[in-house]
Each structure stands twice: as structure tokens, then as C-alpha cells.
Amino acid sequence: MNNDLLALAAKQGDDAAFYSLITQQQEKMYRIAYTYLKSEADALEAVQEVTCRAYLKIHRLKDPNYFSSWLIRILMNYCADEVKKRSRRNGRPQLVATAVEQDLASGESALLEKVLLEMAVEQLEGNYQKVIQLKYYHDLTITEIARTLKKPEGTVKTWLHKALGGLRQQLEKEDKSNG
Image 1 (cartoon, rainbow, N blue to C red):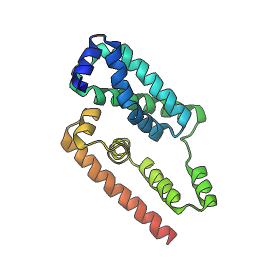
Image 2 (tube, rainbow, N blue to C red):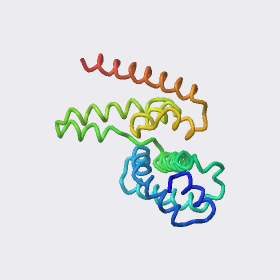
Image 3 (cartoon, rainbow, N blue to C red):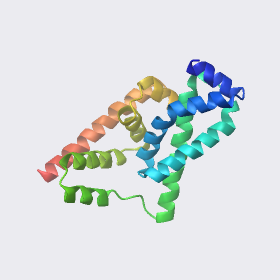
């Protein structure tokens, strides 16, 4: 059975179809949650919570063809809420500096570059961050990103272009200050 039929069956109350769809999306959901939450335990909890929410709200799915986008949107909203809660609880945003110090101590330049890139992405405006993460961390197409964010493809392309330009500027500044 293809995913569209599974989503339609799940919407009509077929638990096995819902389970099959969630199983297919589980790894992608975990990767996205981990990108936001930066913790294995928190990412696993996010996947579990979003699965529960999706199960309870499956009847609200308007178009079964967009099950994946609908599910990812629920996940992104959940993760964004969790990040906001952490910021309020800690009184400040999460710091990545300790990760950089650990990378320097271990001497792994590739890992350091990855952390510096992640720090640069985190400094981007929210929509730009989302587009970069979905496109390059999770290999979604522009069409899938547009569906997930409920924005026109042209808007997503513009955000992606501006985000890449911003990243390029930030990384060039870093390179000049370190070089």
C-alpha cells in the first residue's frame, strides 16, 4: 500500500496504517528533533510526544498526500516550544561554547568546522534557520519545505538564498578574525 493510501486509512482510524507511516518517518523525525534540541534523550522524547499528538489529531489531516509535511510541522512546532521553554527556564539561550572547547581539546578540525557552522546557522533569523536545517540537514526539497512551512516555493527559495548569503558573510568574518 502506498503512503497516500496509508495516510487515508490512518485518518479513517486504521491504527496499523498509522503505525506504518510513523515507522517510516521515525528516523527523519529524530534527526530534525536532534537538530533543534541537541540531546538524544530530548529528541527521543520529542518523537514520542509528536507521535502521540499526531495520533490524537490525525482526523484533522486535510490532505493525506501531505502526511509527512503535516507530521514534520507538528514536530518543528513542538521543538520550537521546547527551545523557548529552555530559554525561559535557564534565563538565557543555550550556549554552544562548551562544545567548541571540547572540539578544540579533542583536536578534531572537521568537528570544529561543523560546530562553527552550526553556530553560524543559529545566529540566522528563525525562518532562515528552518530552511537551512530542512534543506541541508534533512535533505528536503524546496517543494517539501514549502509544504512543511506552509509558504510559497518562491518565498522558500528567497529565504534559502538570503540564509546562504548570511552564512557566507558570517563565516568570512570568522575566517578573517581567525586568519
